[in-house]
Image 1 (cartoon, one colour):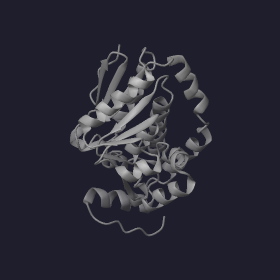
Image 2: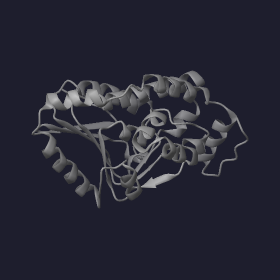
Image 3: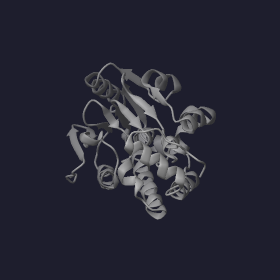
Image 4: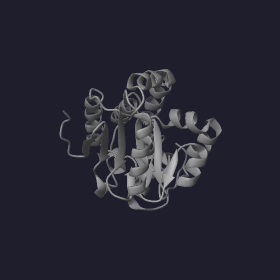
Length: 258
C-alpha cells in the first residue's frame, strides 16, 4: 500500500509501477515537500513486489526542471546543507531500489532534475529533452549527487566541461554521451518504449537483477558527503545571492568572485 501524496502520483500496472512528479505549474521543480514525499514514497515502493519502476514528470514540458530556486534562495547555510542531504537521500533511494528504475525524461531535466534522472538505472528521453547542471550560473554547485554521478557516466573531463560551462545538452547529444539510452519522438512513444524494454527484463530473475545492482554500485559516500558540505557552504555568498536573484528577476548575473 502506497501513501497518498500532494506532489506525486503512483500507478501500478501488473509488475510495473509508474511514479509521476506532479507539480506541472512549477515544471515539476523540486522543493522540500516534493523531496520529503519522494523519500517516503520510495521507501514504501522498495517493499513492494515490483519488477520495475518508471519515473516521469507530469505534462509535456518538463521531467523535473530543477530545484525550486525561490525556496532555495532564502536558505541559510545549515538549511542548504540539510536540503542537499535530503536530495541525496532521495537519489540513493532511486539508485538502490531492488528492481530496475527507468527515468522517462520529457522536456527539461535540469539541475536537481538531471540529478534525479542520473540516479535511475537508465534514462530514456523524448526528442525535446534537455539535460544540464546549470548551477554555476546561479552561483551554486550541484547538490543532489551531480558532482559524483555525471563523471561516472560521461567521464571526468566531459563532466567538468558540462558543470563548469553550465550548458545544456539536447537529447541527441545526451544519447551520444551515454546519458540517455534511447530517444523517442513523443512522450507517448517514450512511455511505450520504456514498457517494451521492461518486457526484456521482467522475464528474468528479480533476485539476480537485485544482486547485480548491488555489485555494480560503487561507493559514493565520501563524495556525496563533501558535495553536501560545499553546497551548504556556498549559500548566502555574494555570488549565490546575485545568481539566484538574477534568475528570479530574469536578468543576467554579474558575479564578483565569492
